[in-house]
Every structure is written in C-alpha cells, then in structure tokens.
Image 1 (tube, rainbow over the protein chains, first blue to last red):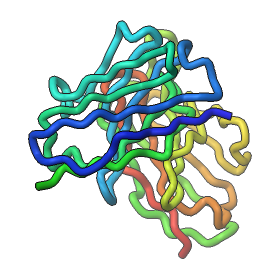
Image 2 (cartoon, each protein chain N blue to C red; image 1 turned 30 degrees about the horizontal axis):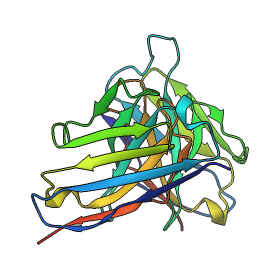
Image 3 (cartoon, rainbow over the protein chains, first blue to last red; image 1 turned 60 degrees about the horizontal axis):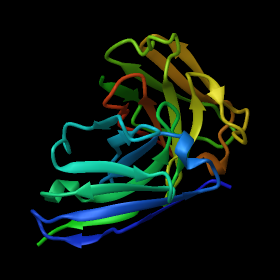
Image 4 (cartoon, helix red, strand yellow; image 1 turned 90 degrees about the vertical axis):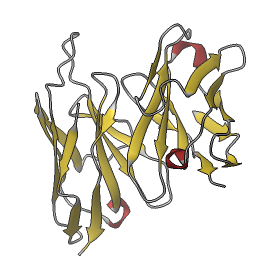
Length: 116
Length: 111
C-alpha cells in the first residue's frame, strides 16, 4: 500500500522558515518524481513544486520561486520542502504527491499557518 | 496555462447524471503525443484522489459511472448516476506544462 506521510507543519511568523518532510512507503521511491501541492483554507488546489527522480530537475510555481526549495533523499525515501520568507498567503495544507504527469497518490497533508 | 471549470456548483439529484466542463487556455497535447488532463475528486475533509488521467483513463478502483472525454482544450467529466459518496469537489488539472495548473473546482452537492 502506498503511504505518504507529511510532517513538520505548524505555526510560523511572517518572514520565518519551516521545513516540511514527507515519508514515503509502499513503492520504489527512487523511481518516481514527487510533487508538493497546497490548499489554502476553504480554497482550491495550488501547485507548488516538483522534483525529478534523481533530483536534478526541480520546478516551482512563480508564487514560491526563490523562497521554497524542494529536495529528496532516495536512500531514506523522503521528500522535503524548505520554506523561507514565509508570508500570510502561504498558509495552507501542504500535500505530498507522487508523480510527474500523474498525481496518483496524495498524503493527508500538513497544515502550515503563517501568522504573528 | 489557465484552466477554467464550469459550473462551479452542481446541485444534483441522486441517481441523476452530472457533467463538469474544463477548458484550457492552450492545447494540452504534449510533445510526446499524450494529453495530460486529469480529474481529481476531493471529498469533504479528505485529500484529493486521482480519478482519471490522460483525458479518459480511469484509475483502478474508480467506478465506471465516472468517464472523461475531450481533446485539445475542451474536456468533460461525467458521472452517469450520482451516488451519495460522489459528493465533493472535483478539479481538473493539466500536467502537460509547468507550472501545473488546476481548475477552480466544481462542488457537486445534493439538490
């Protein structure tokens, strides 16, 4: 069974930093690209970032480019999202998603709240 | 690429059909020949679930009352007979180009 478990969410002040992690199991992590998608409270889905199988290709939404960094550790089957210079509009549930073209498995999400 | 869904709300009677349209601002045909248009379902309080990819390919375990169609820039998700478990928000998403983009979501609710 594919399982994606996010951790690291919480309350952070504007301008602060936070690191989200996603622990993957139930599939060969090193053979799949991975993606982060977020959802602000009561709003729709917003693409955040994607990383290729070996991490050599990374893509970002314009809204987070230069502030967020996606990375992965294939030896540990983990996906990370380092978030800095956080803004109130970054408040959302962040989902870890398996896939490049097909977003076929989603984690339960981690809530990030940016507020003073 | 901008994805536009209509309607944004769809009150339906159980057992009746429902249809959601998704239009992209550019063609979603990838250089590899595939069209990467998917449909997601999000039930209340749940993460999204992939129902259909590449326009019409239903994922394993997805009931056959769900079907996808379309080409180029115009796509449709149809539910042949809505059941109570189908209540939620449906999103189209294009994964042909970066950044990936979602439609605004269509809320399917009981009339």
